[in-house]
Image (cartoon, rainbow, N blue to C red; front, side, top):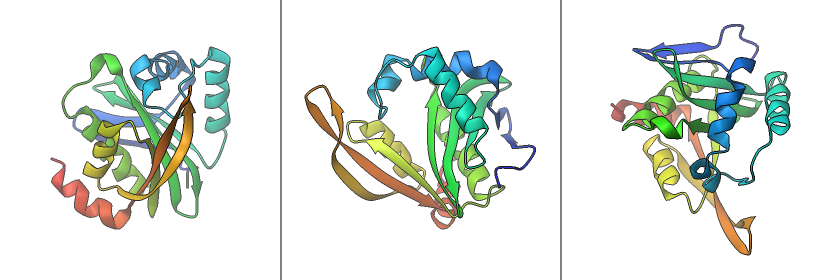
Length: 182
């Protein structure tokens, strides 16, 4: 499935394409942004070597797909689908914190989930949202994700234990949710 030679989808000025090595510097900047780290499962400062290893491991893995989200050819975020197996995948994403605009997340989500449930023919996409990230939780709900369970005290931040929401979306839910986005 991920072996499709040309993974690309576009709508108007928005597009998704495979993440390339030339994109690593900007994606590392996003991953290390304090805003993004505060709502990520891992909040440590990512070193360039660790970031490069992440890219190389996923880009060679037939069960992973890393994508760049662009507006008129300018990077605005990235999406990853990992653990792809039997029509099920896990997703994560980053938006450029310096260029957040109203509706940018919906655009990214729509393109990514159209790709997932269309060209990739996934049946289910799983997500994990840190419980302190209420905005991220609401974003997923707007995209049609359902909360499957909440894992209590899943993460440790200093002396604080934080819950983790496990959500999912399906092709069936997406066909309804996507119509109400725009």
